[in-house]
Length: 336
Image (tube, rainbow, N blue to C red):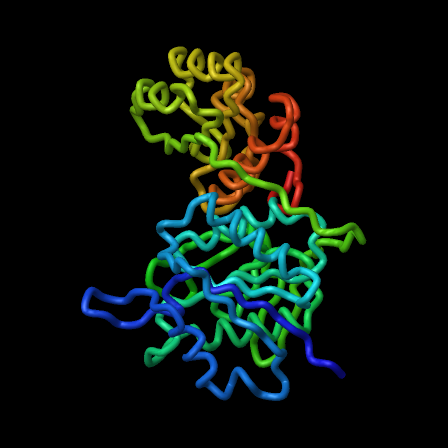
């Protein structure tokens, strides 16, 4: 049987970093050298793979929508030549990139797995070897036709993932959806319904950087804080509310949110809680937000909501169409 071919894009991040006088930093060619020198990656059971290191390797804290577009375009350029894709990425904004790619890559029929590590691949006790080995193996042997995130023996839906640990190996979780796959002694698929291949060609949507605000509510928050975020040219605001979507039932705040709707600024209600979803019909405080035109983000992560807003605001859609699509699952990112 012919071995599958996997395209590996190294964007930067800890996995390929080298120790320097100023601390760990990405060094051109070092990741490729480290992988080529490790016999585990070249066993007969492993797929063939090609590593492409980006010209500008960046720490993921510096990631922007322009970089999401570069990755999506890179996948499109190599889509017909490879059976799957592994994106090596820093952990700090990995969930943002995985979420963005899920919306940008419509009609995806091959696995795209985003991974990285907490310790550089060349260092003692690195989790990079395990993460990369598994990502390559899964991309070649499991027909998961969506954007995923692999970390610490677990494959998550990309737009359901969030970073939950700053310095532990179990750095990511999917609070409102079970893992797609778990790699223990045996690799076991989870009970999640995977994206169905459509038979249509891959379509890569362009994302234009959008002015989006994010505010976390807290007891006694001043309306001026939110008013400042709603100044032009902002086009959307993510409201991280209490519990199932509650906010202070204050006339000044409700009036401000109503004005935002009139100015066609999308206000999306997400819960601050790690698990669960927004239900604005449950309490009077949440119901008041709904009457002001605030829309539910259901159980989306902040990363998924932000990426989805960038995607929708970059498309030629009306305000009402964007609001409607924001509340519908486009890539399995929410449960209604």
